[in-house]
Amino acid sequence: MKITPIIGLEVHVELKTDSKMFCGCNAEHFHAKPNTHTCPVCLGMPGALPVPNKKACQWCVKLGLALGCTVNEYSFFERKNYFYPDLSKSYQITQYQKPFTVNGKITVQGQEIRINRAHMEEDTGKSVHMVINGEESTLLDFNRSGVPLVEIVSEPDIVLSIQAKEYLLKIQQLIRYLGISNADIEKGSMRCEPTVNLKIEDNGKTFYTPLSEIKNVASLTGVQNAIDFEIERQTQAFKETKEVKNSKNKTTRGWDADKARTFLQREKEGSADYRYFPEPDIPPIEFTPAEIEEIRMTLPEMSEQKIEKYQTIYGLSDYDAKLLAEDQNFAAAYEALFDTEFVSKDQDTLKVFAKFAANLFLGSIKTYLNETQENIDSSKIVAKYFWDLFNSVQNKELSSSVAKQVTTESYKTGKHPVEIAKEMGLIQVSDSNQIEKIAKEVVVANPKAVQDYQKNPMSIGFLIGQLMRASGGSANPQVAKEILEKLLKNPTL
Ligand SMILES: [Zn+2]
Image 1 (cartoon, rainbow, N blue to C red):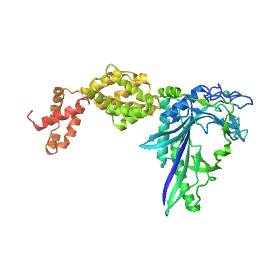
Image 2 (cartoon, helix red, strand yellow):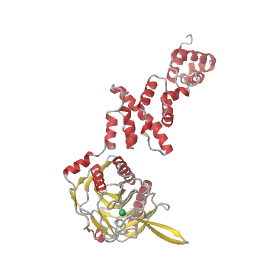
Image 3 (cartoon, helix red, strand yellow):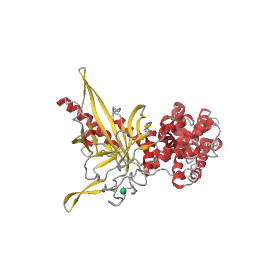
Image 4 (cartoon, rainbow, N blue to C red):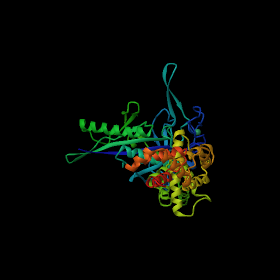
């Protein structure tokens, strides 16, 4: 029996526009007092008329373009009708037949994942469950009602849960690069709903298991675990019942993160059940080719382009390039090092510097930012400091490990890293006369170790250690080793 998972992802992203999708209310809802960012439009009062938010529509198109989608020059909004307590109008304004953008694709770990569509819609309000006066109660907060939402629907091209996670990370990175949403999964400004079923080949026959759509997954790890659970559950269910997919048995399942399992919520409605029809209060939306081009021009350099640039121009490894490009602001701070008067015109030196600076960015600054949970502050990155540090290491005044150490300190304090090294007594002595003097003392003081060396040259480590100690750690270890070897091979020196 051969089992192939068929996984698709629906992703909802809240846009961080100032106002909501169809009214002028403040779209920020995370810290607001309940029901203070509302008006007749987003409360669904009779007679209130929606007016589309132009910026939100343009951002949706921008996102579609970044996903390689085609923009529909003619599109319109529709009503999706269903009742839910936090859906004040009993319908959601969304796009169905003519979404803004369709047919894109992105590459995730070398595999192409097709994007069916990225369309514009509005968010619903929130039901808040709590105990009041000893009774289980549900309160409604409409601050989120009408916040602009983009839905990105993938084709079911994903076959592994880890791929689903990577896909989401890629989408999240892309959205953050565009600056249109915080795309924070834990806070709910990015929400993911995997759809999962299985293709099972058994004795020359092919079966498809019923499709599950999984809701309420609030973390990337949760998405991965929910998919794995569902693959296992459907495999067992097929073995027991041989139930196969038909038009009726599409189900919605919830994800219980504590119990690490999915549970049946409801038999899923088909799209016909929602009675979609064109929104009569909003005229169709048209984008001219010139307008689409204008939006395309606002696309920033994306991570793929940066990764390629880092490899070809700066000679970085694929691994380093990817890490640097992960966060747009971090990448911009790195790139600013090359946009200065200090930059070397010599291509070889430039590449050596690029690698040196990448090591400091990834080894020191990123580590520090991860520890402190901070974002990079580009004002604390001074190009001259990095070039000076680079020259000091090239001149063997500083070791690479000291450079790492003082970079973090310099980022924290704003002080020149070479000054910090001087103050901490970390400047290396590479002057061979000075080191030779100490080396001679070490050789005289350690006759046993010298004898050991004559039998086993590998034991030189001990003498280097003694020399480093005698120099207070300031001797350049490479120079120290060379001088010691010279002395030991010619004891008469
Ligand atoms: Zn409103």
